[in-house]
Length: 377
Picture 1: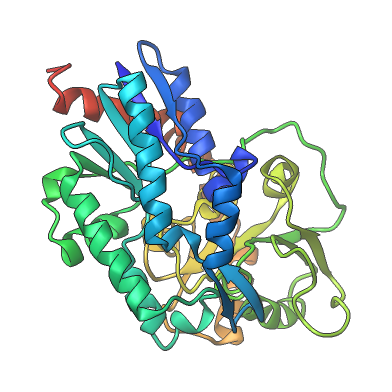
Picture 2: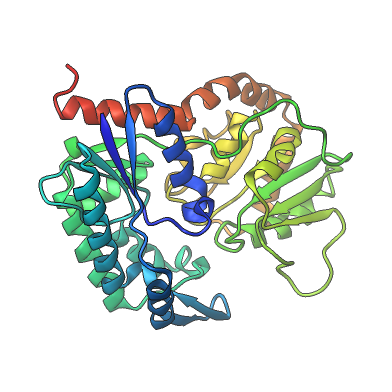
């Protein structure tokens, strides 16, 4: 089957949506009897730079300026035109689209997504979740993008949702027919391997997240003080390019910076526990990566996180509205002391690697498309 893969790639490609499109594209290419056609949608770099400059806004939470080009109507129009030209030339039988772009009318298009703009509006207005979102958008920008996204979803042959939570938001906000939505989840970007050397001698807890505040990093740092009173462990932080607080890095805390998935492998393999009490996650690939290595996980009982973490089994879920370092520290201390939780996570790791693989995601997507296009019974 000839499948078009529509994605406006970043430069380099791996940076696009945290490696998700590149991992999926590679997995689709590995499938037998599937011809994957790259519909890049890339507009000339000078035009893209001009659009980015025109879309720059000051972000108080970042204390700096950032571009909102992805929500620009002109940007979307130019990318769509570029994609349609490539589609007309390459003639795919169906298209898998990353992000929300309309393609040629009548061509079966399947959108892979993790978040509805309507839900983003709710999150930004939420007193707890919205407080920790780094990027803000003007209400008119979000309203325009929400209407645009609704049209894309109505036009699509199907939606590939990254979580049950994402599927629910498409149904509730846009009234999408449930039969059009297929929950396929996502794959692990850190390849599980048992061949890495221990990166440090001491036992450690792992946190991974560039959006440090939104992912609960500040709360974890406060909780870590209470954890060290009971357990002789360190805390490894990956994601932020620089130290996130005034003063020196506390004893026992190690900052890896904005590192690559490959360099994280030994840390995932040898961590005692993965902790990321994120305030908002439309999915949470880092949780999946930890479970694929057999590491118990502490997340938050919110959004898509309960789909991945089973409270009291392979980890713990912090109360959805909790901002208590003590509550988080209690969960961390309990998890570190539990041999049974670690053993269960290790026993389930092979099953997690099998399900949360990009090969499985790609295979499910193509099977759904073939079935709905009448290619298979």
